[in-house]
Length: 144
Length: 296
Ligand SMILES: Nc1ncnc2c1ncn2[C@@H]1O[C@H](COP(=O)(O)OP(=O)(O)O)[C@@H](O)[C@H]1O
Ligand SMILES: [Mg+2]
Image (cartoon, rainbow over all chains, first blue to last red; front, side):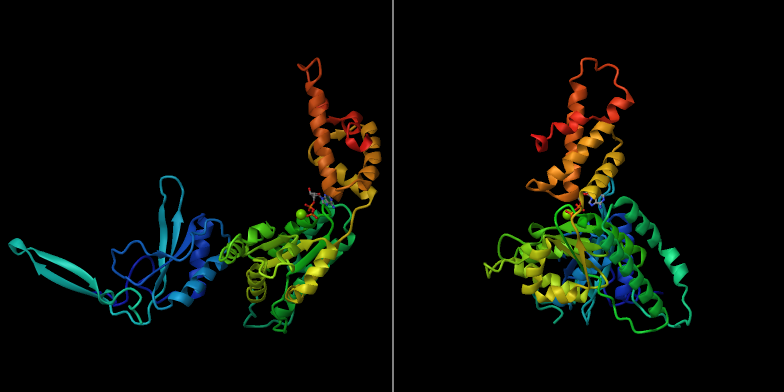
């Protein structure tokens, strides 16, 4: 059976080895070609249900070239280099109006992973709880 | 874009590369659509040749260094700077020196903010939009206000200088404006001068050239001048050149716009408006030009 990596898996490509910057730019170029708006977000809370990460900059609706988005990723890495950073591509066309691509472009050096705990409830039902070790520490002190 | 191939070759098909790049088509278009500007066209040809030879050298593993492509376009208003910048973006794209080939045209107000902390994000936004293409900064000298040492323009200048140096693969910057003011600007901002490789000077047009330009504009908009209107236009031009706020080719465009307005007004004022012909709709008469304040 396949064993989940300890590295957080979210969005596209997260079972692959980390993308190189050139590979990241190719993905961005694809999104730009589709007319999607790219944005850069970061977080230090890797829980799978943590949907809304912090925005690094305004979404980029009228950039024509991946170098522009890569500049923001580079700037974001300088400040939050030991956090999770992802790139989203938003498709604003009518009826879709949602995120079309999302992939991680930066990870903390060490990822302690997630704990799974079980609680027995009435009638012997089991409730599962997913908990990231990192969030035991307050914001800003995780992933030091 | 500027990588050295692993197996340097020892022959390069300059002719084939030139043909593939489609640069000749852009140069031809430039020749066809823009009257005069001989020295500018010559410089553009030289730059294209230099870039092509650079490419050839690189394919043979010879030292070239990333070429600096930032430029300054100096000349009076309406001499074709913006128009040529658009073509330049196309040429650089065809030669593979910019990836997208679009032009983002800005002035001080697009780059400089109103309060502390406003300028850097504004400048960066503009730079991001221009990446992969050409950033055209019109009247660039307004960025620098020596009389105010805390002017926010300085912040924009510093960011621009950094990008012009470190992201030469991502963006070409063209600074434009009056020649004399640009010269003063470069003297007080040597950082810009040293990062700019090509200075192109746009001369004023002669009356004959302005006439040709006006003819091209009339033609492109599907109008025809009557022989009398041609005569009036030939008188109009030298008079207009001596008046204040003369702006070369732009003054021609404005003159034609106003003639179109008067023509429409004339047609509208006609008694029989039920049977306008194609000829009526396309003809500009002498009176449409004679009503100009230039003849008052
Ligand atoms: N040499 C030329 N031949 C034909 N049209 C021209 C020429 N130079 C300028 N124009 C036209 O004149 C107008 C003003 O030119 P522009 O490039 O905006 O000048 P600048 O940027 O130097 O002020 C534009 O409509 C342009 O198409
Ligand atoms: Mg202009």
